[in-house]
Image 1: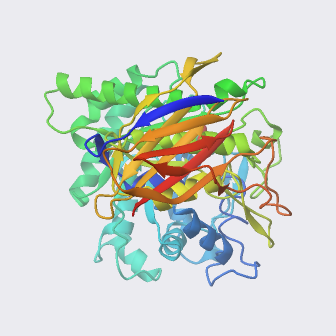
Image 2: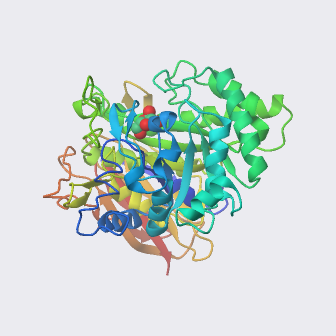
Length: 503
Ligand code: AHR
């Protein structure tokens, strides 16, 4: 048995728990929208054709914001195709995913879906094939009350009140050579700055996200952020970060340490933003919108788009089946995001339904929760108040990709109103239980309210429509508090949540 000790103290505050940390992402890609969110023939469908079961699961997941409509898709998207009478909307080639886009869902339907699901929309504009004018048109359609061409078109389409969307992404992954309309950092930085400046003339209260890197492995990482922010610093609020992790060559130890990469990524982007701040004598700080993150098995066949003459509507694409180890990594990535709550002001689990998603659906049929659903839902529901920095003393384990990493990773939140403390912890060991001891002398008089652990002797177990419940987070009966110390045993390859309340 390994052992690790942690000290927490109410004074070690990193920053507030931000609701926007628990955002997600819906792209017109594969079955994310069509037969995912939207399935008019489904028994639970509403007047717009949106599935009620998926809305319920989205609420249970605790998602706060949803980024839309892409992703790579947005870089070739004409948003006007998605408004007005559905039967008159054009079908278009979606070059990003080699599919046909029927435009049955557009901005009006999406905003109505957000209201139903109780989430804040986060809109992306096309800066791949389009530019400042089209971004302004969409903003006018969404946020201007009335009396102009586009705002009156919205009203004519049934939305009398403006949508008042606050968060806007200035394109998507413009550093990626795969992106339609891919640009150099200089080209994109100028375009983003000009788009942001014009958008603020319409609505000064917007929060604007400029594209950072598509991953820290990109050859332009660092230099891209520096150049783009040098061009756009005063006009934007956040810089995006995207990261996907996957098990390579069966190297589970490295995979379980994926959050180490996320930690470095955030630290490096924040440092670069601060360097631009210093050089430009700027007052404000640019924070991070980690608006695509997840585990993604990119080498699997389901991740390959169709080709040739085949341009299907809503093909099966990126439908990863997540196992228990994936869920442990997702829980650990959330620990990393919370730990950086001082600089990560928004994040989006990519994606929400069917496409690398915690929620799966059958067309016209059942829906179910993947393993990754559980750590996300529990963290979103119970992380509250302030994030605390922990002092951790844990054994290290060797990984091929990240060198020696701590076997334990953890973060805690403290709600000053209730006095409650929640500890989120991962045991990265492949083989050993870990005895966790938490020094709570800074929080006298706590007891265990709930302790759950997600693990399974077979960490490759995945949920299916037929069996989504054999492996769920289970009560961890070893969790106890005595002498102002919490103790619990964490099995190998596990994610846990220990909720402590005032006696
Ligand atoms: O989420 C899937 C894809 O990953 C998105 O379209 C793109 O932005 C990223 O490369």
